[in-house]
Image (cartoon, rainbow, N blue to C red; front, side, top):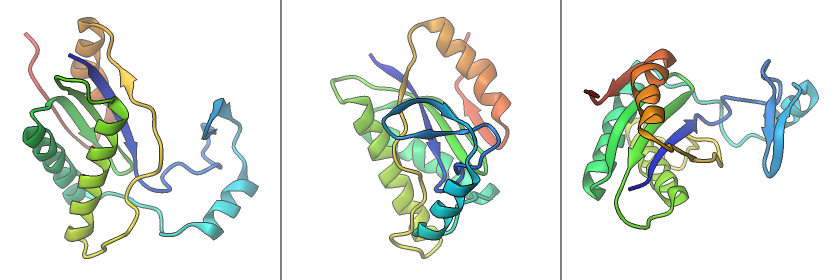
Amino acid sequence: MPVYHFVLHAYRSWNADHPQGYCRKGEPGVFAPDSGLAAHRNTIALCPAVVWDRADQELLMAFAHEVCARRCWRIHGIAVTETHAHLVVSWRGKTPAMQVQRTMKQIMALQLGRRHNAAGRRWFSRGGKPLRVHNPGHLRTLIMAYLPSQGGVCRCEKIG
């Protein structure tokens, strides 16, 4: 059964001028902050930057649980902050991780659009690479330490 850690960033929450640097699609590594590129991206952006308030964070958590329950996927843990969501999910079968991620984003974006009466608004940044959880120790660290350290709202299953 595959287990993956998904990180879903809010739209425009990590621009090229971020102090920790930024990533370029299809290129490895992290690039130094670039204020010129950030300014350019700001002028061509389709929507304002997304910041999830506490109610949005709670709703994203509920939506994620609903998506997983309907598909018989298991959420081991979830943490949602103002700018991103971490989900640790497993499932049976051969569904590719990118499809799971795409499904999560699409349905959660649809629900956020309904809540805010903003159909078609961008809620998530494009891309993102699902991270495979390789062993029980890795899963335990994610659930017991990493997700709870993110702030925002967090719910993780109990690990004995």
